[in-house]
Length: 81
View 1 (cartoon, rainbow, N blue to C red):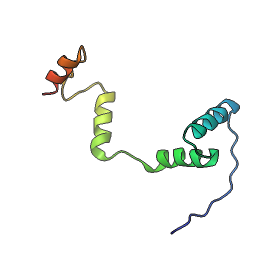
View 2: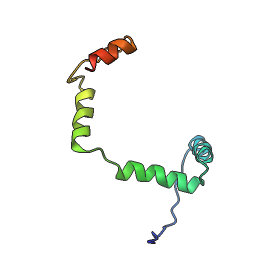
View 3: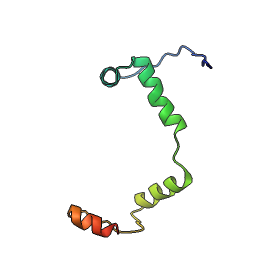
View 4: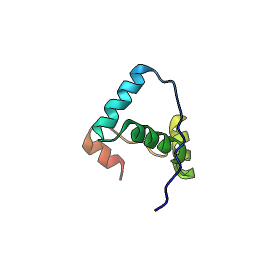
């Protein structure tokens, strides 16, 4: 099993943010350090693929390939056909 070297690092964070991170870590039954590291890993290493990035950019511009009717479940299902 490969182990990663850990480098001790100090950050100054807002007390409110640290409190919220502690709550989130506890909710997932993880240490604060492990939780923060996993959140940062997700941000740094999980970049959407080209197709997803294009779809996100299209949506941000308000350009949609198709219109989904969200007025009701039935209308939505019909518009997805």
